[in-house]
Image (spheres, rainbow, N blue to C red):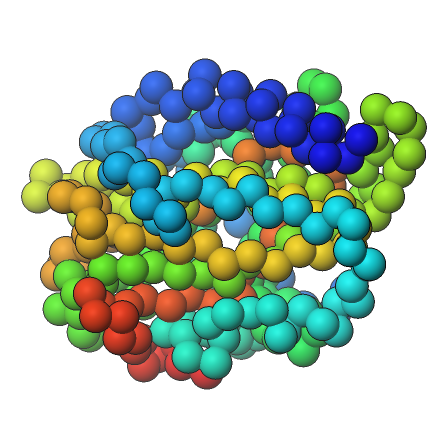
Length: 289
């Protein structure tokens, strides 16, 4: 039943995604110890160029759609071992970090449409400090709206902007965690995060002062057994013209969106890893572990 429900939800959410992807704006719509910043960014107004994803590759443009139904529930203490890049990442998040200067939400119409306001904070999850994205808004049907966040690449690479154009691959370890219960069509409720579907995007700076939009990886994951799920997101801007970052101090971004879901679940970013064409890690010294 849950797998059927996941498929049905995926089809519904995918239809909603396609219905909202025609914009040429910024985007396609579709407690542990905590240091918190409430962020409500203004509407994005700069013009952008929307570019299609490159031809499908196994790990850069097509979602794996993995699920965990049938396995036993996992305790959150097992989560750190699932992070694929944490031992050798480029960017780590720390509790004393001014997160609002580095990460911001964005929308096309001042959050009047399907985008959600979010709270951004750095929270320890199983001992790992992570960027937490808490989704705040629901639509008229009670579903949680789409959180869209963007990470300032020019700030991560401040003082060594020349390394930006070397980035061929971008990876992120992401964890989803249930806050409210998911209730299926059969009326059965469980504390699981459910679907984690969305897009991984680069927004390099352009000569005219705007940013292009390169939706390189659309992911489709799900967790129906445990209260958390862990996934690696990977995109390769280096295989697509116009998707790579440039040597400039102008704003440019790595962006992540999660499509709408009926249940309340937060997601966390544990790290970011930037690689050159040969797979070597590109360091961000100010954001090292």
